[in-house]
Length: 238
DNA sequence: AAGATGCGCAACCGCCAAGTG
DNA sequence: CCACTTGGCGGTTGCGCATCT
Image 1 (cartoon, rainbow, N blue to C red):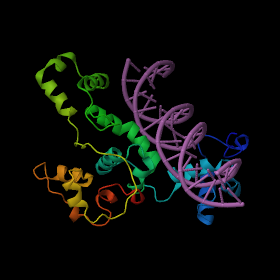
Image 2 (cartoon, rainbow, N blue to C red; image 1 turned 135 degrees about the horizontal axis):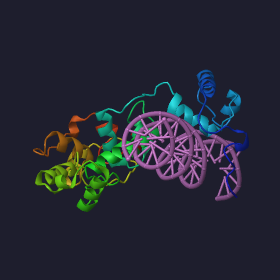
Image 3 (cartoon, rainbow, N blue to C red; image 1 turned 90 degrees about the vertical axis):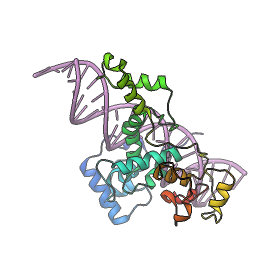
Image 4 (cartoon, rainbow, N blue to C red; image 1 turned 180 degrees about the vertical axis):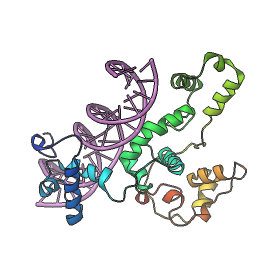
């Protein structure tokens, strides 16, 4: 037995939303709030399915959305969160106020993926890709480079520089598990067991230029790094 | 100037998990 | 426990615009 469709598709509009449809949806949500998406289209006088209304509201019409280009800080945050969470766009979006999962997903696929690949980083694993793959990619992407430039030592050095990761993402256990929001003996316990504290793996390594391995977890209050609790990822806080 | 190509983004589709009777 | 509904998510598509040839 298959699922019943979310709406009667033969009576719904598809494709780009018109200004009038937007206005109707916004007006309805302003007066009635976000509620039952299934019944909303009928109540609002829209020939759209509930899913489509929800998507339009969340991704485009919500008043708290931040429009415009992503900042460098947002770029870095997305990359770090992606290295931790993978393609959990909704979780990543939850850490970027005013940004939607769809927006971040699109931005990842169109900008960040390419940015990482051009630096020789596999956007899926966040590890350096094989040299041959990186070179192959560079050749495909950078059509401006001439063969004479490629054979020169300086060009090779440049390519090697570009292949260096922006930041080194340590080997992480990305398994998500529910844990108590606070682990009293996290720092000592984690490090004494030789486990990697992913809070420090970013902060310590990047801010101290590798000179100090001292854990700064005790300095982090509340949700900790990026609002994530330490040791194990507290799924509820994300 | 016109067609080809690439890119960015809004929207759709199908699946899944939670909720409900 | 089961059947079904609903909301939510991630992957994918396709349109419109910009750039290139």
